[in-house]
Image 1 (tube, rainbow, N blue to C red):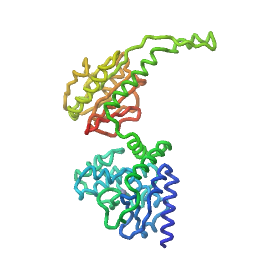
Image 2: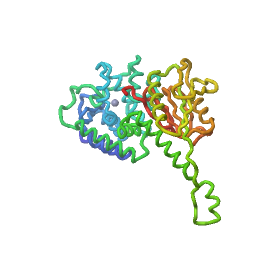
Image 3: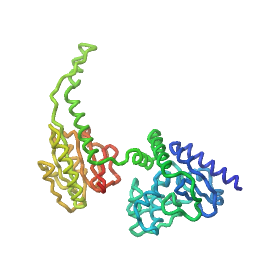
Image 4: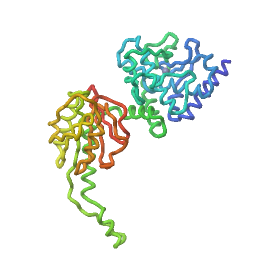
Length: 389
Ligand SMILES: [Zn+2]
């Protein structure tokens, strides 16, 4: 019986590592431990996975793989340290556990795995959207619902449980290295579920200072425009057909770099943070020569968006909902076309499905002034203004 249970666990881990090879390093850093003290499975902060032998005996190999992947998820997402960082009352940990489960189970489902017992999914959390962070789901759960998931152990947050084995295992330093390695493998694989790709991004590019990121995007975008406009092969290419082998670039005067700033002026915006974002943009654009800035204020379908002369003239109108698609379309429709469109918003808005057909070649930046918000489309560059900075 015990031998069969151990083999089943081992087979589960092998299948998990085969189907999601980018998680191999994490899966094989974990140590399995059989115990009747947990009803199903759990994980501790030292990367030991506890499993009840009677529970394991009921699992198919695929289900055992899902159990491994689930518990590894708590470790990879560092739910223990993130729970500690929130400094919430200990009795609320079950809500955190449930929020973490929802994030993990989303990536399991995307990879085609199902847990033997239906776990918590994001759609069980009122008001949740796919792609939300554990912290966001936890806040939503804290509004009143009381899901009661199995305790996933100290690896999902909180103090060591009585049934956990003391000492040894993977320490924090090694855990950091494992997470980095797994994140690199996820990037290299390219076909990992979205939730894991987000994990990889967060692990490999720790949030850079938003000011520096914004400055860098504006400068890079301007450099591209300057480079492209100094020389052009456009018209010469046609003439070159007459003289094969020789293509001379034509020289063209550098043109003005055009930045459109679409500002969310709806009531939900935090005026202080928007102010900081605009001040920063004013600083960046003021320091560059040959930049033309247009500002378009936008809330819910506010007719033709208002134009203001400079970044400093933006006034929050307040009230109403938000539809930044109107402002983005207005920017795209403006002539001359913008090279860079920065959308400063809290992200509480529908987004266009793709780059606007009226100006598909501009670079689009979503500047989220109130912290991370899911839903920003892939084709936009996303910059999050962190609450702490
Ligand atoms: Zn869990």
